[in-house]
Length: 304
Length: 285
Image: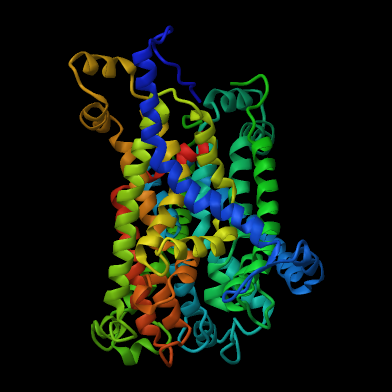
């Protein structure tokens, strides 16, 4: 990133006043961030130390909410499920997106067309995609169960959303469909930034495609890979829309994610203080993740 | 490599490549196409499994008409969504252009602090501060208003769009400004007449991201909009799909999904290079 330096080395009084005007330009942005982000963030921390119902007075209870979290097995189950989902969906997304990125990396006939097609689901919102798939997955009016039945693959129409395994994997399929194009583009930028002559030199040295992939592509893509990985992990940990819209947390509350549980506590049970304490836990996880990201994305030493 | 390949191998490679490309494209596009086609079935047929996806008993827009009869109707939610998205675009572009210009061209106290403050909000999930946002909006009298939702969406866009705009302004050579200043342009005319045309691609990029972000957002709208007349499309359609208005009419749900998807797809196809630019800026930074 380029540092901004004033053009005149010795600033006069007039230019220094001119520089102050900059504050006016950034003021609206700062105001938005303070009112709708910094203050709510501080309030979350404060609320987490209170018993805070929707109506009526709130009262300071110290760390009681956090103590309650320790005993909240349903929250820990939600967190466990969220991590499980995150690992599986991230692997699935990469398994699809990486081959696609290699497929569209080089400009060949129709590549742009294919790239656009793969990317289309990524611009559709998560809510739209979830509504769409909740129909495809519906046992009576949907596509998959009736089609499998018509083709004679199943003896009767199977309700995919009734038991955990098929429901979970249906969500994975939907998310991969929706997100793979996005990850593909990120990985493509990484692939394209690898100097072509490096690959050619390796070919001359007799390196096979697999050896080249391991020795050149992967190391040089470290930052891109880290970025795609973090985006996928952070997005999955915050997953809500698809589990709310398609499964309502079911079957038998087995697919409640962390955000879903916080949503239930805060806006269904209206335990705002407790919800805030849960939010602080989620927030700590995400901030830790961001710090790992900064470390992974650091400029490689000796390069740049 | 190309020279070494025989004509036959080249043809085989090309065939394999295009068949892979076509099959993968079909897989990615099928759910979208399937949905859009089935919305034009008559209501009776739309209740059946979509095999085949296209209407077999006549073309009809019945599903779109029924959609308009639930609750306050599709059109109210669509208007809400349009209002929220357009306002988010206008406001976030205005705020980010000003801030990007300020951060790029002026030295003032706390400049770096403010910049880092704004960018660092991207590390914190807004899902974790929704309750206080709800309380802040209530305090400001913006509770259950579309304007309140717009304020939240604008704030969520700012880290990305200010980062984009600061970089866009940084890329404009200082000589251009100095020349304009010689001609007596003040800061505001400078920004509008001289700078804005030069950073225009950046503006289109952040406008596109702001629109898609606001149009598709679900959780905040679900939590903050409690009155049905204030529902945006995703919230309205989820209420419909959950059976809140009686038996689920899948034809109507698909019509709603189509209304939600089509603007995004059209905008993306029209402005694809700006979208990819934004992604690259985020990825390469």
